[in-house]
Length: 425
Image 1 (cartoon, rainbow, N blue to C red):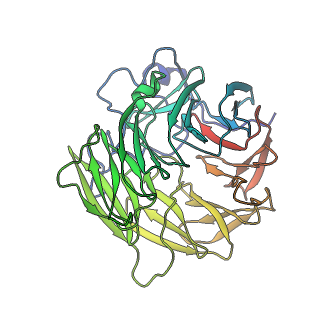
Image 2 (cartoon, rainbow, N blue to C red):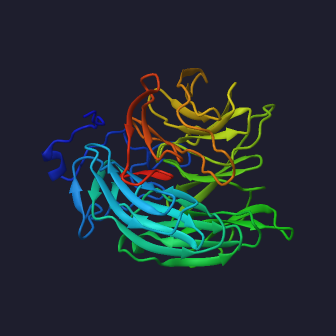
């Protein structure tokens, strides 16, 4: 069997509570100047002052990330596939999904009734300067009511903080309590009417950042709100047409018409910084940020021009112009700076962030979506592999992007991968 290579940890390491990570050194806790402070707690990280190391009743601590694929078929069947030994598990059934997103543990599946939350039971806990890995029984947690496909925003960790959902058909912003999810309950910290069909609610500290529309419904600004949804005085920040957000190792980045708004933790304050687009560079703005989880550099499409790279540590944008019509782009932000893209011909392209050079391209691997009702294939990356699903065929391809985008495995999950997520990271 072609096993997925994973870094090994010594048992002694686990016993002293410093499980090793298969990825680069942690990128948490950077202050507003880009320097690492003495404390290793970073924006959105679990507080490392506790002595439980993220332990949860009923969960087993393991030596390596329990990486799995969680798949959803067209009828709502939920399955798990172990990426090490390919053990398959059928979890249960939810309502038929039309979209899905993940924070690395939970999958948030949009249905006609709202958002079904599935707990994969696999996660990584960020302890600041090291990681701990856990696995428990998967669970169908329940449904969050809402209308329309929501904009879902995740924090840095799944076991603390919150998850934001903005429902475009009702204009409602919901903030879910992640600690309650960890206990198998759905609890809304707040539900606000933001007015309009454009908006977002992005977790930040104990509260969130929400959009502020004008009378016409156009988003003109964002503001912070506390955990109960009340506005934080003095937190109103200009951000025209705010769309897209991502939590990075540095802070929370939000896409605006003129660049990015970055909110960085500085002691007990969140400091807003602006990262404008480069002068003289013309391209559509970034609205859909994608990256390997927690990394400081993220990618987003620049319309059909190419893609943007936002380095939140250096506070810099770079535009990479491409000759391919791209559907998705995601930054690995590894040592070589790999950036992966899926083009409209179903090919995976690999670029280098530093030079923008295309270093690999595959044959067509999946079919392009044949209409609005057909989901777009999803491309995700971790520190060693990329995964690409075939929504119509149900399979998932594992791609070694550092080795010429070689297809390492063709995985057949227990439920067809109409939608999927990599969990356990």
